[in-house]
Length: 232
Ligand SMILES: [Zn+2]
Image (cartoon, rainbow, N blue to C red; front, side, top):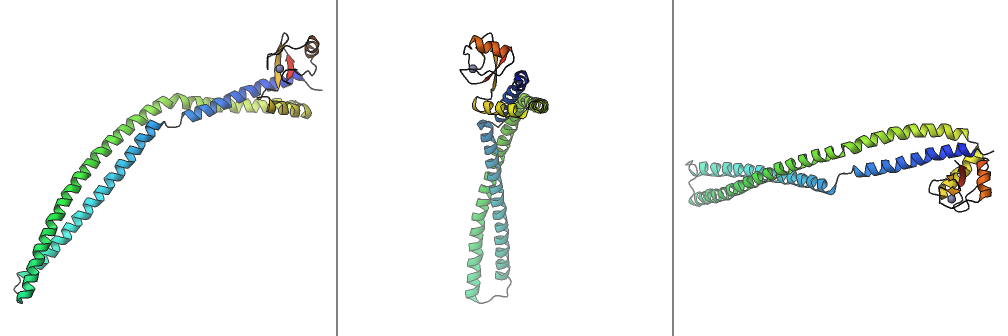
C-alpha cells in the first residue's frame, strides 16, 4: 500500500537536493577565472618567455665576442711574434686580425642591442607580473563568497542525501519505483501538493471526487500533469 505522505516527504527532500545541486553547478561555474584575468595571465607568460629569449641571445653574443677576442689576440700575437717571416703569411695574418676586429665591433653592437631588449623585456615582465598579481588578488577577494557557498552547499547536500537514503529505504519498492519513473518525465516532480482543489505541480483544478480520495490518503493522479497528488 502506497503511503502518499511518505512519498511527499521524499519529494520535498529530492526537490531540495535538486535545487542545491543546480546551485552548486552555478557556483562552480562562476568560480572559473574570467577572460580578463586569463588575458593578464597570458601577458605575463609571454613577457617571461620574451625575457628568457633575449637573455639567452645576450649570453650567446657575449660568449661569441669572447671567442672572437681570443682568436684575434692569438693571431695578433703570432703576427708580432717574430716567428713568422713569410710576407704572404704575414699579410694574411694582418688581414685576419683586421677582419676579426671588424667582426668583434659588429658583435659588440649586437650585444648592446640585446642588452636594451633584455631591459625592455624585464620592464614588461615586471609590469605584467604586477598587473596579474593585482588581478588575482581582486579575483580571489571576489570569489571568496563563492568558495564559502560551495562548501556550505557540499556540506548540506551531504546531509540531505544521508537523510534521503533513510527516507527512501522506508518506502516499499514498487512505490519507490513508480515515484522515480514519474520524477524522470516530470522535471523531477513526482508528487504535487494539492491545495484546496488545485494541483501545485501544474495549477490544474482537480475534481471534487479526486480531492475527496486524496484527502482519504488514496492514490490519485492529477489529470493535467499525471503527478501523484498529496492532500495538504
Ligand atoms: Zn498537475
